[in-house]
Length: 111
Image 1 (tube, one colour):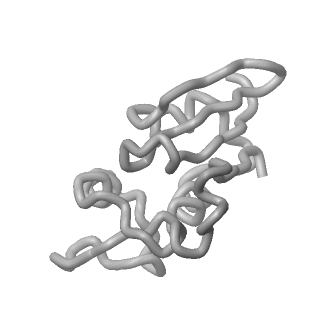
Image 2 (image 1 turned 45 degrees about the horizontal axis):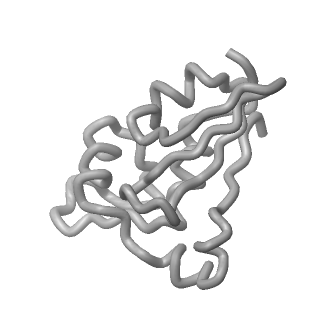
Image 3 (image 1 turned 180 degrees about the horizontal axis):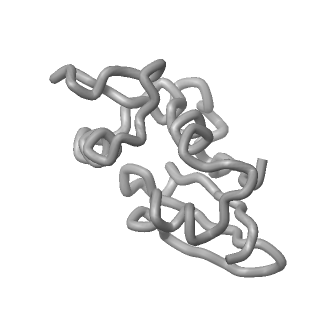
């Protein structure tokens, strides 16, 4: 893959509980409105649709490929970016849900 997702160290302490926690409804709505959610994760037309933090990786994998660049990731989840550092590749953290302990590090090829 052209990207990897790493958990924040604080989330790792209760990693399974973290993965089974729902992301905020407004982010679920955002992902659904932009047709980012694969059918095997859920049906966005259902009113009680919920996305779990454990679903973030499959959502990203469904929408990014090995050839994905920072620009591709930015179009997908850029509005959730907290920090990004460019080395040979981009190392970026995203606050999915606004919690500083709940973010993922995304590594993509430049640009």
